[in-house]
Length: 496
Ligand code: AMP
Image (cartoon, rainbow, N blue to C red; front, side):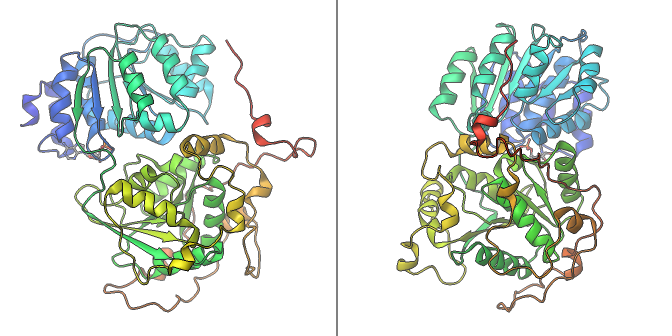
């Protein structure tokens, strides 16, 4: 079916043509006519399916009539992360260039005042993360009673991040008669309950089996030793010897590990940036931009920061840590092999990871081949490493929610120290100095079997002057409270 049969306006059709799209993706073909007919839609689709345009294009068509009033947005899009919200804003800029609509981004980590000014002017499309949206609403600076259309995107991620109570509150603040578009990659019971409560007779559109892995991605497991420095050695060797390497996202399970691995890679002469929830918004944006535009070849990220990001040309994904939650594996490897390209996803497996690997293989319904020798049976039965003892929540079912709590906690400086550096680096440098100043030249690559295509050139991996310093926000540790568990120190939002 061509785009012209979907009911989109001529202005939107010309924007689609300018974007170079020849035909709608399945989610667009199935959802757009229902959105334009003002039906509620339950879309079960992952990122990469074209689901953003599936709601942005009909919204643009519908917004061509009518005007926004001060502090009363006409439409509201909820996204779980700031990066996803910014990505949706870019879609409105791209497809809505001729529409002259007021689009506002309401996300945490940036000034309230600028957002307030935009709200006062009147907003056609408000794209928000739930916490900051409620903050504006509680201050009385935002009225949601004019919202005609509500989009809840990445709902299963909202669940993982503990946002469902916020979503329920927001759904009660927008008019009952609004139209709702709800997108999720999976349908756990809590998400089903929300859809039953807040969608009215929705059209269900399902375009891909949840948690299915993409054929275009070559997946591999690589055995490593039990010590963290073994994992870092293995990672460096894999990067230096990767076939057809262009760039890579490296996933860690916790933000502390992201910061630690980032420091280590930079010290070893790699051109890397870090992306996790403890960085302030400008550092997150700078890291992402420098990776997107190719200035940085390695992006070390946590799941919370990286989920759903649309970076079309990522050649490799490395799982520095095996994800605790098998769903995260599917989302991580889906960052490569996008837009018709092939990709490689390599997971570094330490002896204590065998259960997590088994859970992933069960979810994806296939076993992942080992590159090189698989671990011997006795290795996989080894007791957990001391560093993992600190993770009290291993084995819990709600890793996602725990991970989000971890992302929200104030940073404990002592936790960010490279406590596992068994082989000390000769000249320890403060992080800021490493990031700002010239880094040491890369070490000679460890011997590895020759790759069939040349390994990345050292100059590609060497740090270049960063576009903006990527700095870690590290609140000072108060000696009076440093003995207290972090959850007691977390700020509590005042009731309105
Ligand atoms: P999304 O699932 O919304 O993250 O979109 C994934 C990618 O697909 C984005 O880079 C879009 O630009 C691209 N895309 C969206 N719709 C189409 C289409 N009809 N044809 C080709 N590419 C598309």
